[in-house]
Image 1 (spheres, one colour):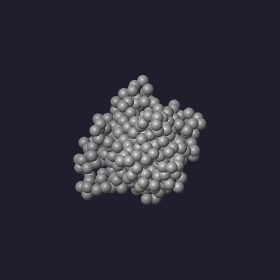
Image 2 (tube, one colour):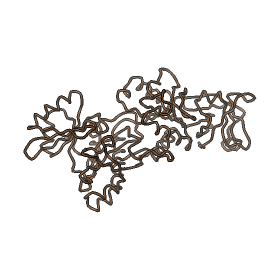
Image 3 (cartoon, one colour):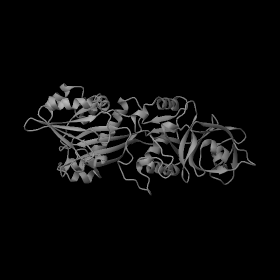
Image 4 (cartoon, helix red, strand yellow):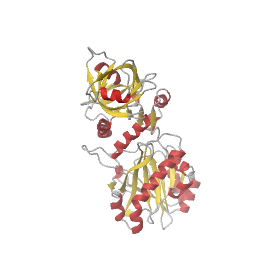
Length: 455
């Protein structure tokens, strides 16, 4: 079944009936599309019986304004088209839905807050690659409907009634929203009723990731010792075994609430807790007293306790790496980008939200005291590790992921370690937004949507 990119033009019905579609004569002959009998037009969950009118010396697609309104299409769409002769089905797409946490209808120039520029970039990329995208929130989901209100862009953002998409990318940033019964029901219906695809369908917990990856023997070398902090005994065991351990909120992000515990030369224990203004330091005379303080926080927050690592650093600022790994146009994992992240100020985490800065991998490692052999191999080894971890996670966890943010570290001997995996990687973490250039990560996202939907 052949696929072609085609521009869509609109006409007002009159002499030609509203459910007729005008298509270039050359394509009709090439694909042997019948013009003497009805066909089915498909766009996401939208289905309509149509007739084809052949137009000489025309390479585009013309549909009526009546039909375009039913489909939610703008006047300047560029789509892919395919014809399935056995079922006499003409499909347009792919139609991509992006589920986001919130919108601001009263701010037409910035309707999606911090991701508004990314959304606009995705619209532009779809226009160039032949796809159509809309954005919706959980509030737009209604029961028992084969359409949904979504934001589309055509010389400005507007809310439009849209078919259910071929592929939905879950960009929710709230576990509470994601676990809402209406959202869960919608995700099931996209797959079961409409044959659609839903990727990055859920958050990952830190302990879940390490427990599942530990079952993959080839990944053991990347895994620092990690456990769920479920009592004093595991804290005592880890602090006796390692000079530094980290407590990380199992469901935390952006470096929030991480606690670094280190045993001091005088036998006391020091904690450093991340805050926006910098680490907050406390000293405890004994480990039980430290645990008493933490146990209060454990009532509302589950922690992962993890082996501290002797990471490479630049001018005493820890350096780690964020790999963006995405599935491509053949459905295979590939590394889209890797950047080094250098902790800022007196912070011990490198997150940009905590003052960290970005740097090319080679540039960052060359500034460290690593052996020169390890420096030269760093980029290749980081990419191989990220790919292996993504594939391992795909095998271990029964959920559909299309992109992952994988945080890696490298110790002073050049050994690579996994820090955490993020199933909702920020679109601002790898490269700065450029109004004139569509980033590889955005192009790859569309490639994967085309693969999933058969376009």
